[in-house]
Amino acid sequence: MKKNILKLGVALMVWGSILPSVQAQEVAREAKLHTYVMENPYEVPKIKAPKGKKVKNVVLMIGDGMSLMHVYSAWTANRGKLYLDNSQAVGLSKTYCANELITDSGAGGTAIATGQKTNYHYVGVDVNGNELPSLITLSKQKGMSAGIAVTCRLWDATPADFCCHNIDRDDEYDLIADYVDCGADYVVGGGAQKFENRPDGRNIFQELEAKGYQVARSWEEAKAIPSGKIFAVTDPKDTPVPAERGDRLAQSALKGMDIMSQNKKGFFMMIEGSQLDDYGHFNDLDLLMQETHDFDRTVGAVFEWAAKDGETLVVVTADHETGGLTLVDGDLQKGEIQCKFSTGSHSGVMVPVYAFGPGSEHFTGLYENTAIFDKIATLLKLKK
Ligand SMILES: [Zn+2]
Image (cartoon, rainbow, N blue to C red; front, side, top):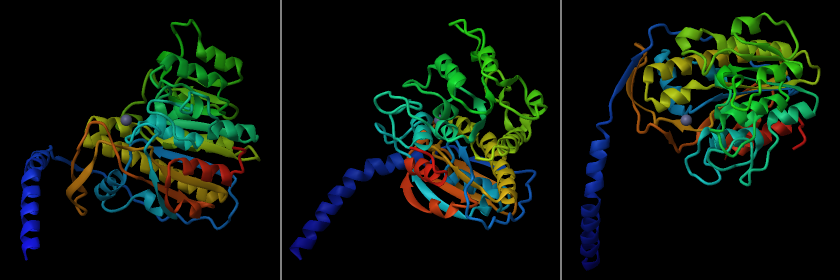
């Protein structure tokens, strides 16, 4: 009995000491409520998964900063349907980096691209700054084709993780210069302002042309090129917001797959919904949902292409979460979501990995972000 009274006393003391933090939580609950209603929902047909087992090509799709909250919010806003629902397997990826619990896209993307956890802000290098071969490099070494298509500037961390090497993700001019030697057959993104009129006097567009690339300075120009190596830098910095650029990401993904699938040895392609991260940082729910839906429609276009092809594995994931997004209320019939953000930065949570096509069964379960590289490299029989 005495023991119980003692326990009660200790419990009350502990309760007293946590009271201030309870008050802090009350304040945190006052975080601004953002409401979004999707005016024009899109239909999502069932996509029949291919039956074969052979993995000839892999398309890796990254929603930068996309957590299950982003996916579930977008699903609610589109009246309970997304192309992602056609996935055959789902897993969870742990995103922490070598020296920080909460990663950035530099280290987060490097883990996926190269299979090694590295330091915060590093791109395509290990913790000692040594260059690491990426899925692009290794695919090229095997005689396959390789490419990327993104909606950001090409010196931004995620595309740079696959094509560049630097301990500083802000070393923009050096990152862009790395594209000359990265070996990719197909590149689409923004960032023209760092390719020419550079402090080092180099003109990266001319150097790319000397390497056999057909350089396009707009998406219209890129679209008209029927075959061969394409390097399209469509905008001075990032590509326009989703409503202004239309389905350009889906178009650039499909064009890359059409061209690179002419290689009998297969291809690897990375496609990024880059601006999810930006709108998470801005806590802009409207633009965040627009970019997430654009990414999902691109997923749909890629799934449909892969379903017809039969030998293409599609993996869809994220490098980390951005914004601490939480869906607190909503209406499935009206396509309304009410959300709060807990940060203007990244948060620590496992992110989903979706897979469609042959080999997708390998992506179920719980694993490190580096395992995504391992699984893809094993399925494509790349020399690690
Ligand atoms: Zn970010």
